[in-house]
Every structure is written in C-alpha cells, then in structure tokens.
Amino acid sequence: MVGEGISVGEAWELIRKVLNKIDKNSTNLTHFPHITQNAKWITRVDGDWTGGFWVGLLWLSYKLTDEKRYEKLAYDWLKLLEKRKKDRTPDLGFLFYPSFALGYQITNDAQLKRTALEAANTLTTIFNEKANFIHDEKSTDAGKIGQSAIDFMMNLQLLWWAHEETGEEKYHQIAFKHSTSTIKNLIRKDGSTIHVIDFDLKSGDTIRKKTEQGYSNDSCWSRGQAWAIYGFALAYEATMENSFLETAEKVSAYFVRKLPQDYVPFWDFNDPKIPNTVRDSSAAAIACSGMLTLSEVAKKEEFKETVHKILDSLSKNYWAEKGDGLLKHGCYHKPEKLGVDESLIWGDYYFVEALEKSRRK
Ligand code: GLY
Image 1 (cartoon, protein in one colour):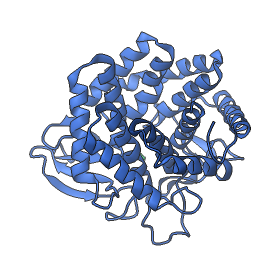
Image 2 (cartoon, helix red, strand yellow; image 1 turned 45 degrees about the vertical axis):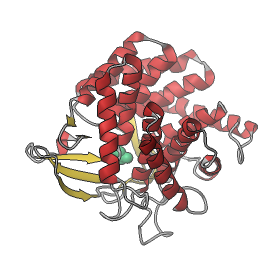
Image 3 (cartoon, helix red, strand yellow; image 1 turned 90 degrees about the vertical axis):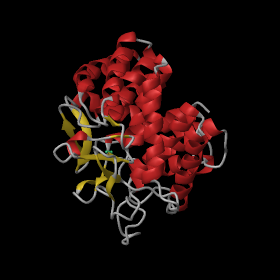
C-alpha cells in the first residue's frame, strides 16, 4: 500500500491504532475537538473553524472499516454542525467539506448534499468583486477593509465540489477568480507564500500584505504553504487550468526544498531559530495529502517520493503515543502561543486522509 517506508502490515497496524484513538475520543467527547493543551483536547461547542475535521475523521473511519457505528457517529455530530451553514465565514469550506460533502460522497444521502450546497451558497456571498477574493468579514475595519488569506485556497474545495454537483457556474467563477487573485497577490516569485492581504473593500486596492500566524511579513509560514499546495492541486483538478498546475508545482517544490531531514517542516521556513524551534506536523500532513492529489491529477511522479517519506516520518516519529490526538508536534498559532507543540484536529484529519488515499494505490 503506502509505498516505500511503510509495509502493508505496518499500515494496518497504524490504522488499528488510529481507530482505537478515534473510538476512545468518540466515547469521551461531547463537543468538537480543536487543539490539545498538554496533550488533552480543548473542545469547541460550535466547532470553531475545525468541527468538520472531527466529523471527517469519523467518515474516514467508516470508509476504512465499513463499520456502521462510524456512520452513526458521523450523523450524530453532523447535527451539531448544521446550524453553521449560514455563517458568513471563509471557514465554511473547512467546516462543510469533510463533514457534509464527504458524507454525501460516502452515503449518497441527498440531505447531506443539500446542506453542503447551502453552505457553499453562503460562501459565495462573501466574495468581493473588486479584489476578486473571498474575504473574512470579521476582520474588516467597519466595512472598509477586506481580508483574505492563503488558507482560503483550501476552502474552495467546497465550491469546486458544488460546481461539479450542480453545474452552476457561480461556484466555478468565484473559485477561479479567487485562485487567480491568490496567484497574483499571495505567491512570491520563489514559490513561497504570503499569509494575509488586506484590501480596500470599495476599490479592491491592496492596503497591506502581512502575516498573522507566521514569523514575519517576509517569511513563509509552513502551513500556509501546505494550504497552497493542496488548494492549487484541487484548483487544477477542477479546471485543468495550466497556471493552477504551475502554481501547485511551484509551491510544492518550495515546500520540498525547505524540508528538514525528517520531512516534517518547522512551523515557519524562515524562523532564524531553526533548528531550535518547533515543527508543524499538520503542515506535513496537509502537504502530503495535497501532493498525493497533485501527483494523481497531473500524472506526475515528481512528488511521490516526498509523499512517502512524509507519511513514513509522521507515522514513525510523530505518532502521539500518549495524549488525545493522533499526531504530536503540531503548531497552531505560535505568535499567540496557542497550540504550540500540540495535536491539532486538522493535522489528524489530513494524516488519515493521506493514509486512506495511499491505501488505494
Ligand atoms: N486558519 C487555518 C489555519 O490556521 O491553518
């Protein structure tokens, strides 16, 4: 299955360990797991931006085992997330793709599709026509400043899916324009990414480019880079547009060039304290799953070796033997000292997603 590094036997052993933890968590949790503190889940009643990943882990468990109890659990948790479908936030992709859209793909339940489409519709309402960006209204300054970020490339997954399901052009157009604007504004010549852009909501003019979760405005936050890898791989898959493929390859090549020996990146590629600083295992998991998609859609072998090395390293060196999460050594928000050297629910999700995808090869 997984290729170099992990044997078929080891992969099944790993899946068994994953399922044991998911079983334990599903018994103990009443609210959505978000990040850990001292290796114990901090939870969120409304799911924050991450509730979809916990439901997604339950769907992946169902896919891996065919055991109906995971399907039932996923449905139970979906009920707690559904009310978020009208929230005007770019996070709708994170919230509704791994939960409702993935659930629909697995079960063919039309109600799950309807809810995911409602969320996709809400996502289209926060697109700014001047800047050609989906933007975060909570960050706006009294309706004057719009804010977009490299992370939002991943939220487009919900729009690409909605277009494929319905054929409605608006989903495709908005996702296409947002991707093009991201290339223009948030990808540097060397293939590194900028985290955040503030723009004038009326004119669309750029006000500033900056970081919020990275080391500095000029640095490259490794998880932002990972979102760009996966986001542009999906954009290419949905459109076959050459500039999206070129960008996916360029940001992937930068990520691979900057990886340390164990194939799991430091939290920011430009932290001057490297190697005496923290890793972000979630960036490795996202990039790994994104490069798997890229390899598949571009029919290229280039990143496959890295994918195997990352998966191998995460499985062997980053498995959280103790604690609630699956992967240790994630980093959520270093400048705010949140979730530093902890487990992160999205890292766990993309790790299992990558494992499940490579099992199919
Ligand atoms: N907001 C997405 C992230 O922290 O990566």
